[in-house]
Length: 303
View 1 (tube, rainbow, N blue to C red):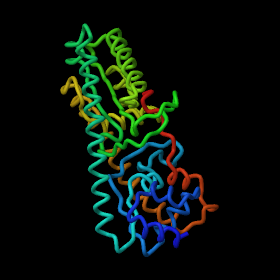
View 2 (cartoon, rainbow, N blue to C red):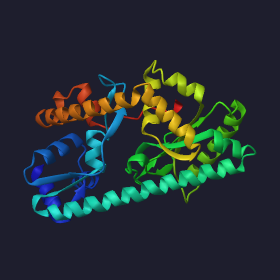
View 3 (cartoon, rainbow, N blue to C red):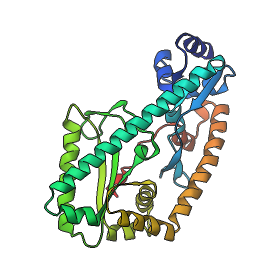
View 4 (cartoon, helix red, strand yellow):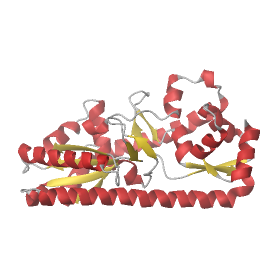
């Protein structure tokens, strides 16, 4: 297989893992990844960053995202040793492209939320008492626009979804939160069905009582919800509520906890990568499989 990979890279120049996999027309992704990493003639340049992902299938419930194979497919440029400059040029181009896409998705979310709030009868109260946060790939400037089917409808959407968390303070009644939720849901469907947009919006609307309950981390789903609050960035609404939530995360020791998880996940990732390079496909344990292949993300926005 190595000779075939080298031949393709010689002919086409540096490629992403997805491009290489398509050109070599192989179903065994593990063998492709392993061959590239074992070859002394190939350079693999990674793009973007790794961040914490909670995964209930793993011991300790955490790993790094993207997974090893998804990082290879979507966030790596593979090329020949003699093409180092071309590899770096392509990696920089893709990195800049992801930043542009991330900014676009964030801007789209901002405009959508601003319009929703301004059209509500209680708009001023909502903007003062609710905090709208953005999370997911967009926060890390790693959003992409590769078409993929939306899970519930099968409609092709443009890459990474837009993840929103909405929290209302004690002054916001359940009725107002319900009307806000309904308005966001309507816009979610419009984004999905509009052929000129085709973006997937995942979101959750909750009050501070729910946040305080989740901060106790009584179960896995609470931990997931807190991890999203930890990584989320301010988008719209109440700055005071946003910083209040961040302070609560710190007071509960969760920021330090997630940072320690990320450090441990980085060490574990390196160990698994070494193990996978040395092992045969048939020797892969279930934990190795979950570390290597992209797993379906837990439906975090139920929380």
